[in-house]
Length: 127
Image (cartoon, rainbow, N blue to C red; front, side):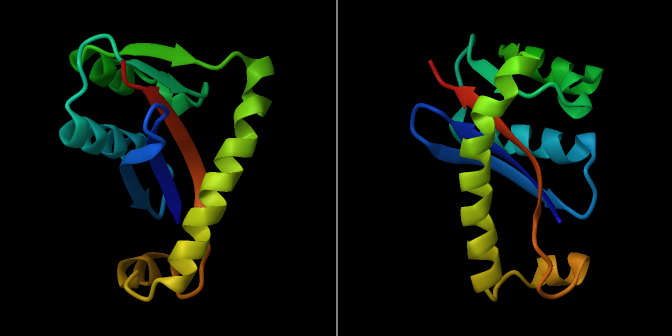
């Protein structure tokens, strides 16, 4: 199971997410659209991601521009700094998923007891 999450760095709240059995650009686009639908960010929001192909692809970049967001991508040397935060977040998600018996859809897709695999954490900062 893959999880894409959008974290508002100002409020420390996950504002958009999507789960799927495969890591696709649709997964990250759905998380982005959920975040936009829930928070209605203003023009000029800085949206930070890693340099993964799903975030660099034309569809994702067009979605960011259509919502007036400014794309920011980690430099390769900086990537390690965010890993600690990502691991902490996904450890919490994993614990919640394993405890939460209402995750029947996750069990149907990935099998009972399967652990979510980290797709990405997308950091955005509302300004």
